[in-house]
Length: 284
Image (cartoon, rainbow, N blue to C red; front, top):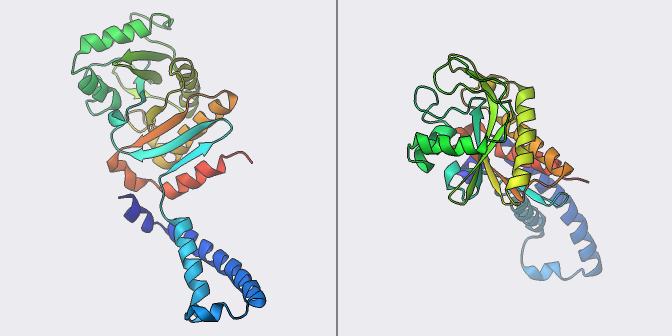
């Protein structure tokens, strides 16, 4: 639970102490001035004066530091970033789906069944590989391959990294972005540079096709891409947020980015630090 998670976080207690001492100083000055101009008022409260300041400071500190949803609204551009824990496919928004440069979909020998695209095949297409491939083919008609006839299990046509195949299925847009390269043994890999470039192209497509509607994305790079050793989960979240915010400052992408965290990953993330990071991106 978010409450117990944040209460175990040292950042929460540091924030509570900082807010408490700041409030104590402010209320000390305020009550001293109040008592100076109205010397008999505080005595009528029948409360030991020594408790008034700490009680008021504690109430303020708790209100200020109490765990809130991890989200931030930005006025320039008019957009919002939010982190939630749950199921990517239950967000009721357009979705980002990470894929390889071959856009393979078959599970389990090529694509892991528990991967995001594996879940897309299972839950949205009901294991209908033909229908999924047909929609991908239609979405890739305008894209130019960089290589054809590659000898490997699965598909044999390679597209440029950063290619986005936008599928519209049951009124939802699925932005399938190629951010990993696949070898002849179907092993995938990527790099920080490739990932950044792929995200830049992703936001262009979202801006063009989403009509400003919110989009939800998983934490990119945690799967079989091998990025988890280079880009730990906390950094991967910041990386995704920065990419979205830089693109939004150039031109608004959409009204909201929802970053969806798997329940099993939540304990690895310092949500309060992410909230501080979101706040730091507000323009002064």
